Image 1 (cartoon, rainbow, N blue to C red):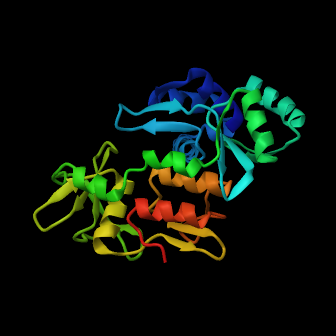
Image 2 (image 1 turned 30 degrees about the vertical axis):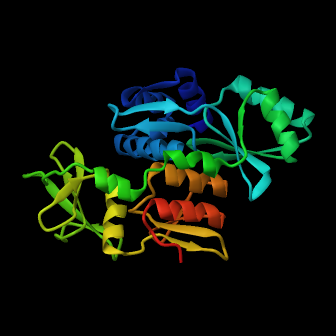
Amino acid sequence: MNGNQLLYWLSHLGEGTWESFSKSIEQLAELQEQQEDFLHNLKARVRFGLSEIGSVDFFPEKRRRWQVIEPIFASFPESPKCTVLIGGRSPAMMERLSLAVHEAQCTIKEEARGALPDQVTVLGNPEALDVLATSIRIERSIDYAKELIPTFVPIEEYLASAPQGNIMIGWKYRYFDLHSCQWTPDRIPRTVCECISQYGRRMSFLQVTRTKTVKLPRREAIYAAAMLARISIVFYDSITKTLRVPMHAPLPDACARLACINSGKIGSISNGMVYYSPVQARVARLILTSVGQALD
């Protein structure tokens, strides 16, 4: 599937339901991608990928709706001569950008990402990048991390506002092992229990105390469990500037987006871990603080 064509179409629509998003992928998928299991996995990968690279917001709590983000040139103070195009795009906008880049004496770099839209990076002096953004009427952020902070909901807040709930009776259960960072059918107290119905519906619960269980989104539930147990599951290497996250405990959407855009690429998977690199120390600190993890 062509990721550029998908984002062009989604940008044209602007927003919609999960059904409209799903149909868009089905219509653009190649013949060899139409097999049911492959298509199901493709939809999931593209959904999380588009969120991670800052193209589309998804709102599972609002009847599973999505909305394309307005185009932004995202930069960071640590690398002021580089900016990444995020948000929606159209063929006409990309053509304007291609022409304006040369006039502003900047350099554009486009990198294919398969089922996701191309990574578009522009290099130039900060003043030239300002001129470029103004000329094609795209918002410019000189510190995208600072602007993204308001979208972060600290794990402590998620936990404090989580409604109490009871584990679903008659559903299948699996528990998250904080030491192996794997799911297991074996019961583990004081961790995340994911309940799965016979129809595939999933709900996540966290046992906070012996008598209190709360309902949380799966990603946030895992990090809340790690915070309560004081177990580190996310690691940052300040020398290589690499942020390492368990594959089965992906970062919440806003944190994953910041790591991806700061590093300039989507996370790479190896040995059960997702690696983001290079991630600046300031950005890593923001992410780890948000998910209740300590920065070594």
